[in-house]
Length: 234
Image (cartoon, rainbow, N blue to C red; front, side):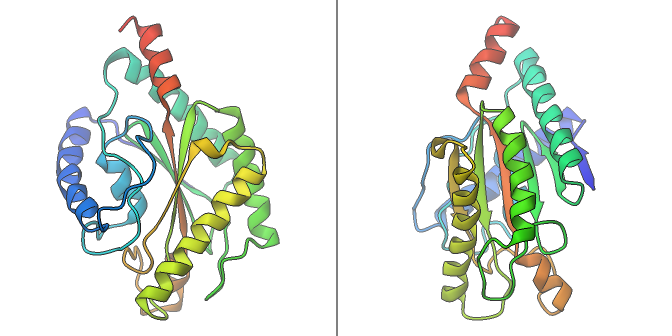
């Protein structure tokens, strides 16, 4: 289990500036396709966390989040507390999930080692994956003032075009399953990057299995932000 929280404001600021620049390139590389509006008020750091270390080096999938800024001041503290609670609950409910707190959001990584399994060339949600997603849906239903970004990836087996479609199918399989558990479709944005954003070594079987992954980012929506600002008197 991993639960990381960036505690240094200066570190967050510097990282955000660097990744904001990088992700502007990622948007350029996405064939000018964007879907969804603003998913919360998060910065580029969370985008870097969910699509991997090769941001801007490729990927024809749609980049479905508009880069914004971290909510600061007392409102940001209130949002952070809610997101901390949600992250901890996810970790408690799904011990194998990799849970990271990044800026105002949460990034959850599922691969073949920790809960959502995709065999080579497959995108079906099997029984074990359903168990994991059922637990996640239960937590997400408790925090309705959040938006959800689902991002699909593949390993490098097969052609790039085929893998782009496969990653899209995997991402939508997860999105559709969670929506089928009663979560509002308006909370979701779905993206996919094929094989272009590996986080592990595709030359090994273990690395390929980890690259067959879906990332989920959970972000504060406008209702949560406005409520926090009202409480803070901003």
